[in-house]
Length: 226
Image (tube, rainbow, N blue to C red; front, side, top):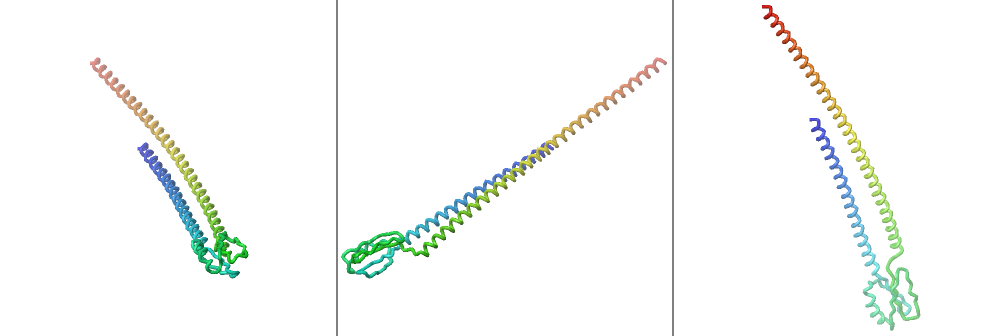
């Protein structure tokens, strides 16, 4: 019975450990999935922002100088070719289109008119974008720190659980050793009791044999006396 109880106890402990390991694996997988989903969402958001920026940058301010008079028109990049065809009809013989980056300058020369293109972004928008980028970097740093803290906490919890399991195993081993010692003592006691019983039985048998021999001797003497 005790051996069976020990076996049942061991099986229960094995099941508990298996459940803990499975739970830890599930938690790790769910954390990985969450981090992957968050990364995908961030990548999608970044792609959308890049697409918005590209479409925004395609919007161009056209500065048209016709006979020293400035006309500004906001158009898309696709419309520049049309303007280069139409603008000469306004009073010039030729059109020069300078495609520049943000803040680029095209000098005004003595020609009848010059078309200057610049990326349409104000200083306020630039500052807002820089602030957004800084905030995103800070958020990423905070998220990284939080993830590191969570991983450290989880590792600490896993180490504590492993230490508890080791302590439980040591306690189980001590209990098993105690039970084995008790069983050995019981077996020794049973052996001693068996030996005592055998000795008592032998003594009783010897006494009975001695009494029988005495009775037989008395009977023989009585028969001789007759």
